[in-house]
Length: 516
Image (cartoon, rainbow, N blue to C red):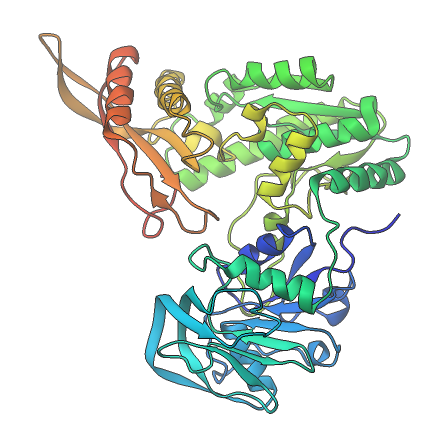
């Protein structure tokens, strides 16, 4: 069996917020790309026999003490290299060129003009809009490098050494603000590196099924099924590969959205034919969370109790050797961030920390996929759109959207308000296409109001909706006023105990997408 990951691109991460986006842009061309810390062992970087390397941007200056540098082994590999922003500066520095602080920093949109007939910029308009984000610039390229493009403030906005197939760009081709950026990356991947298209949802499914069958053999596998996209696609893929050898455990914590527990069972038991063990642990979770209002404490209580409930059900199953998880590639990158320029961004809500008596081998069939690839695989596997395109939902569920005391009554209030908001967005075709994450939050305050002829003192709902490409930054959705008016009117009229609705217009940063 040939490995679909062979012959792609290795991306060295120097700490840029856009590094994962580089990999996604390459994969969109049908070519596998993997991200590694810049100081990872070369054997790890080369494990999939890449045809070329991309050096990411980063926050440092190449002359700072301890600044990330290009590994010598990369320069000795005789393979194409593309440096982006800091990656270009690091490549220049490593090869004897000169990098200095720019007198006029470039942050934001810029226009470059380029030299015709260069392999990197071939076939593109001579004048290009690009996105800059740098304080240093190339003062003198390394020997035998030639300028390929310039901007008003950067005489070397792009450079290249045709013989060694080394290239650098001072801008960010991976972001949407560089309209021709995808074509620049495409030129590097295909024209310079000589990669071939082999990475697609269909080819991944075929490869994954064969790998799963070879590894699992006749053994049994269990999976924690949440109904979220990642665990749903993992379940469907395993079902396709091993059928009745899979048992999914679904724990209803009481913190899910309206009708979600019933929907999970209908889809995965009824439509997919998966053996699902369903546990309604609502009372246990509500009891454990009584009086808990601090968000991090909520997360720890829910995470710990979930493990206890899952472990109890797992012990009741005999002959299980493997535990499957819906780990995806961003989880792998973030959780394994060990280089000097990277930080572990968050902890994830997969089934980790199981008791010592449960000795399962871990199987993670989606660990090489980004979220958009997971959705495409889910569609190819035949999962319904409302599962595949379900918006992100926090591991602790509504517990971190119900601010303050967690009671069944308050959770039901939030569930109803949230369902109305999402229903109005769905009617406007904005739940999948126009917004990235939309939900209601129940605030820990009450508000004076007038309903009918009576004074009221009731709960307040905040509506939150954002747009984003990567969830690292996000902007609040500019929703139509009439849509917001309909949602607000329905909530105060249909949800008992609510007399006020507000709309959150905070971007990320400075805020986060979730309130807790």
